Image 1 (tube, rainbow, N blue to C red):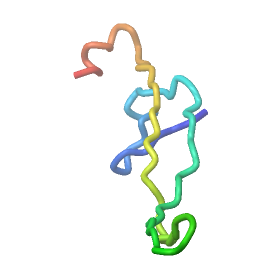
Image 2: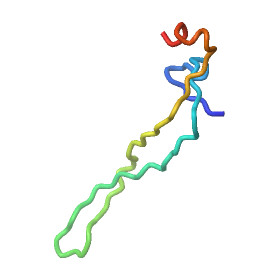
Image 3: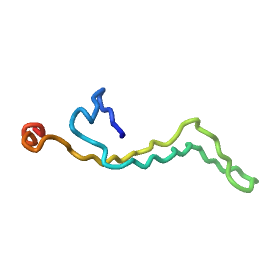
Length: 73
């Protein structure tokens, strides 16, 4: 089972359950590209950082059927 923590609060405690395993991709390194005269190709400088990665997570809302409206508010 997976859980997501937002602002130190478990989404399981809020009644939200992860519907499926999220796809987590590896981040790409940031490079600075330069071209130089009399040189075939480009020069690359490693910036030492990575691009941001966005992770999409699908949730299901789970609670007692009689308390759904009360809990959802």
